[in-house]
Amino acid sequence: MKFTKEEKSWILYDWANSAYSLVIVTALLPIYFKVVASNSGISEANSTAFWGYASSIGTLIVSLSAPILGTIADYKGLKKKLFNVFAICGMIMTLGLAFVPNHSWVALLLVYIVSHVGFSGANVFYDGFLVDVTTDERNDKVSSYGYGFGYIGSALLFIVVMLLQVFGAEPLGAEFVTKLSFVLTALWWCLFSIPFFKKVHQVHGIERDSTPVRTSLKRIGETLRDIRKYRHIMFFLIAYFFYIDGVDTIFTMATAFGIDMGITSTTLIIILLVVNIVAFPFTILYSYFAKKFGTKPMILVAIGVYIVICILAMFMSKPAHFWLLGILVGTSQGGIQALSRSYFARIIPKDRSNEFFGFYNIFGKFSAVLGPIIFGVMTQITGKSQYGIASLIVLFLVGGIMFYQVPELKPEGEK
Image (tube, rainbow, N blue to C red):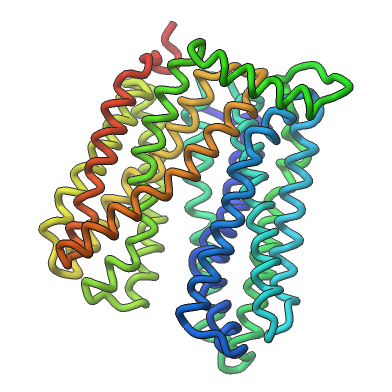
């Protein structure tokens, strides 16, 4: 199946912006911030807490505003403009990280928060554009290729950044190399977003009126009051809340889990790269099997794989077992994310896609609360992080049972 120019441009944006998530949010900036804060006399505990607060503030701003922004974006001609504002803001602020003075940890956090709002806000509109660039019959494959190329793109830049850290830190200086990595991430994001800026345009939408903000708030209220009309959507969102919480928790707590098992930081970085590389082909495979067997069965298969991961975690005691866990995560992480997005795109009204993707964003973001609590409590009670991972099985069971209640979608191409 050949992709259209619009589909290729949409897919390439995932390649472009995923580098921010891996290089800035996960790998580099947290470490750099700790160094800057320490040099300013901030204790280890306080700097960790401040980083957590900053990440939560950025997520909270986007999550709470997503339905309103999404509803406004459903007006014809506004979705692309709002996407441009948030994406360009994110790129500029990512570049700005390189120019924050090395003694100003407060400024570094503020610039990071704005960059994170730009990144996450643009993603709300990016997801909503899925209904504009492709058809229901093709969106599983397009969504999967987006996630798949996102994993590869972020891994490639991450390798470049790590090589700079290893071979450039001594001759150029560690601080210079880190700031250069921020610049490279911003340029990568900007360069590979150009096709999206040029080729992707809003197709579905509603007519604009003179008071778009007030009318958007009214529309959200009407949607919530008439929620019975959208029971299938609510069932999906509740199911998604639980199972995606398990997915995100396993990924975010993997580093702590690996350290508990005696794995070195260098090995953890290698495993992270391997997971990204494995995720690419398996994400594409999920789209292939979704076309053959249906999207809903394949999401249930992915949930089943995560249930197996939780069970196996109880018996893990060696570093080799952690490699197995990472590879299993790689086989299904992209698939469950991509098919969830495309499934949701097929059950929502096309002309109100961003309003509903706003709610999708809220359920996805706030799901990252329950899982870490369950993991932490069970780990403290048992004294073993293996049981913390295993306890997440409840999230996948509840999510799977709820998702089973959502209406079946026919395999692609079937009438």
